[in-house]
Length: 221
View 1 (tube, rainbow, N blue to C red):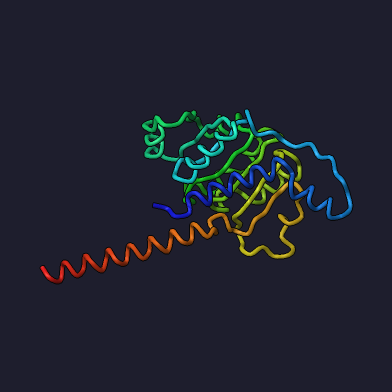
View 2 (view 1 turned 120 degrees about the vertical axis):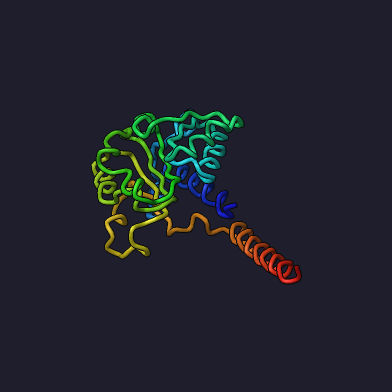
């Protein structure tokens, strides 16, 4: 069981909502004395593409559907694909990576980092996305080619992005990501909630007690 599943999924949704509604930009401009009129994106009826189908991805799919989003999923491996097919409790569409990129209004990453997923999204993939699409990453930074993402955002190949993970942490003051307006940043805190921390501690204590009791049983046999 992963104690941070709910926290990370909620953070991904919060980043999506924040980016779609342009909340950071409007907040900054209002504090500068402006009263901006900024066109936002309504998420109901839009398609959310989820890359990866583990606990966090599936949790996000379910809560995003609650605000009326359509869900499509690209499972990275055969095992997670089988889990999706066998799960009849929820309606989603399994697609290829290319289909997901082309059809999604927002893309959220929820997969492990390995040789298969290294720079899974780069210039070629960004070129297939909708020009107003939003990219969310609360998984691992190197699943995305950061330089290619910067270029895609600056050139408006994609509409916006939100990142909680980075190649170098913390970010240096001259990092190019800090200069991009259509990008929302949080400092790798998606799993940092009181509830997730408490659950993690409870799981740790439970495992220690279980290990201790099993060893005592073995000792007295």
